[in-house]
Image 1 (spheres, protein in one colour):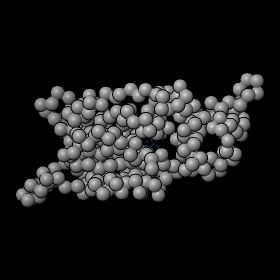
Image 2 (cartoon, helix red, strand yellow):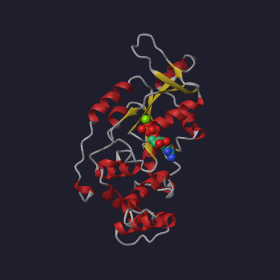
Image 3 (cartoon, protein in one colour):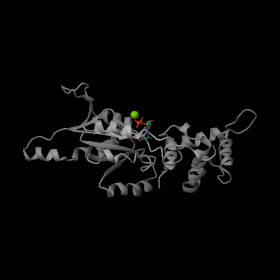
Image 4 (tube, helix red, strand yellow):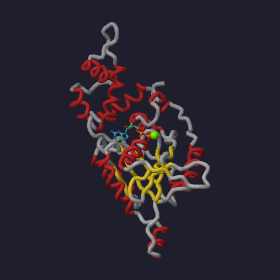
Amino acid sequence: MNSLNELNWFPGHMKKALNQVAEKLKNVDGVIEIGDSRAPFSSFPNYLDKITKDKIKVYAFSHGENADPQKFINQIKKYEAMGIKTFSFDFRQEKECRPLLDYLSSIKTSKDEKYLKNNFPLPDKKFMILGIPNVGKSTLINTLSKKRKAAVENKPGKTRAQQLIRVSEKIYIVDTPGILEPNYEDKEVITKLAILGSVKFDILPLVALTDHFLNFLREKYPSSLTSFYDIDISGTEESVFLNIAQKRNYLLKGGIYDSIRARKNLIDEFRKGTLGRISLDE
Ligand SMILES: Nc1nc2c(ncn2[C@@H]2O[C@H](COP(=O)(O)OP(=O)(O)O)[C@@H](O)[C@H]2O)c(=O)[nH]1
Ligand SMILES: [Mg+2]
């Protein structure tokens, strides 16, 4: 297999996943949809709207510290034009969760208005975190739950207690995130998700994937390569990876440079953020 276009993409079991999540959503007031700041469109399951359209919605993007800031600002204008509040930060950092928490606390539901009218204290609100695998759902839940001790709500009449994590005065997060399938049908999307690490690396051929990524970097972020690796980036893709292998002294038996290891290294360095702040979506 030489080209990414020759791949057969397996259709995700999207409907099944969606129905399971829709069922769980009945128990919450709102959703926190998670994407990756480095690909804020591709990391979103685009079929999610079907089940969240009647819910209060907030978008939170992980890896804020590694995304191209200018691109991200322009990209989220699309979401903000739809009236959706968006946040982008490093989900591992406790103090960076604050603006999201403050916003969740400020949300008023239609239920709240009735309480306010009768001078009752406002009820608690429950949110569910939703997103495709590896975008940072568990990390966000863990970071949020560090702020307060996890509280368990045990409602009588329910066969299984719902684990709710109290994250601020009246805000709870459902402990199990809603996991959704990425859009396996869209080759461009799935390629970006493989680079990010959101879909299994081995469903894509490494050489085709890294050729594609190298050409993307050469076009959009050439200095990320030249300044990090200090190499000549012109020539064929294979020759550039051999340059990286040489620079890093990745040697195979017989003194041959290991371009496969160099290819894997390029992906690793991108994921670690060492190539600089890079966004995959336009
Ligand atoms: N640098 C960075 N890494 C993150 C961030 N959020 C999540 N991660 C990492 O991404 C990986 C997947 O995160 P995880 O929370 O398990 O994703 P989940 O599958 O959506 O629950 C983990 O190695 C996290 O440490 C972030 O904002 N910045
Ligand atoms: Mg998880």
